[in-house]
Image 1 (cartoon, rainbow, N blue to C red):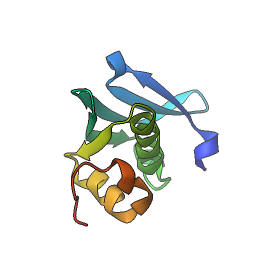
Image 2: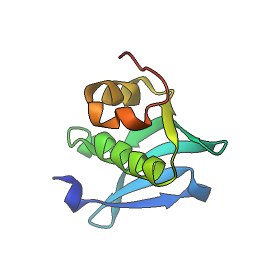
Image 3: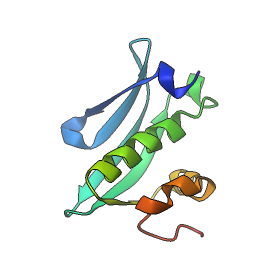
Image 4: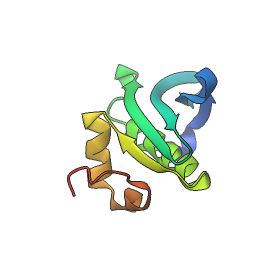
Length: 101
């Protein structure tokens, strides 16, 4: 499975992004807009059957796209999502905190 097999949908009053594949919700990521210039990612939940499919990374990319469109910086309080940020320097332009770099 790759990112093109998944559709993304914002729900829950704009605080959750869902990953949907074949009409089934396979994961989601919680985020909050903080002020006018920040987004905070708090956690991701992935269907156990899809945990090895990089769904978290795809969800993070979608949040990054929102941040870029809205000229916001992103911070995370989730250790796993922080690890994704560290492993992907292409997110550096929206990174609010150092996150280990």
